[in-house]
Length: 415
Image 1: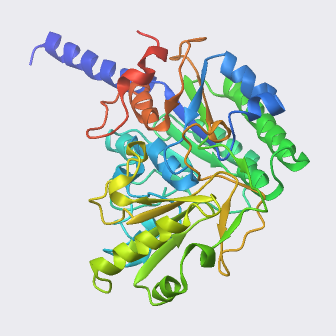
Image 2: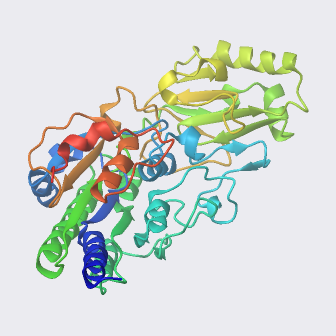
């Protein structure tokens, strides 16, 4: 081999390696339950300042406006019926099990789409996770190199400190894709309600910690870092006079079928997902139950009954999938479902159909060396976050996702 060729190949290898290590790091942060209208109500100065240094927009939750379906849509780029986690509470007739939060860690059948951390790892980009729904899920490619699972005691400061420590690792060890999830604002909103001093304090605290984190990035981290700050949904104050008991929704005969598990109900405060066991119920029985439910919905006007072949198109619930319920009983905003096994002291909640519900809108901010400052962005669904991150990290957009490159490509600097 000629000396020229050796030098040329060496140059190519070094250039490729440099290009890879020089690519900007992406840090994705989610503040659970941080409503878009909190920006005006609480004026979090550090978050607002960060937005002015890059771009900001109103982020639209997917249906339902629950934590797990939305965080999985954010990290997979697909709607819930495609990633498999269609609610915080639902039933899988194939498995004959109700979903429990984090169940993907033990059974790969639950999560059916590839998280972005897996895509990064497959492209030799180290990923780090400090809390994220289903971050331990198996069966969809590689798990993150660094992965701290959820616990109730870790503070927001501990999250940010750990992210800084990860980014300070030597180049060959440091992650280039980092994500973290913060629950304090959501917790305060649920427990104390909108306008409460406790919620104001939670917003102020995360804003302070986020501001300190951005300063530490500037002063302590030499590599280029693009930061995406978002939330999954907002929050609606509950009307305590609009509690819906299951006994007022279902007849005594149907309640008996529920007890016998001929009818399976996955219940949250905002939806009842109803599944018929077709081995135990005839078509006539299913139709009778549906008719009874539909006839009762208008009595107090607190909920609506939807059949699987008439779900709103934007819900993206594929009726051909086993996990799709036969019926969805949807609470009207401020009303909520209760029963003897599902009691809650919450005074605010989310999960309602987010369409035209401004209180449920989430936040989106992005800033960094590859983000155009001050670019106008219209509101958009959170499935488009994955294409943005792929473009920022120089990765090809994953196949078969619902998110589109075109939505957020205009905010990226052209090099």
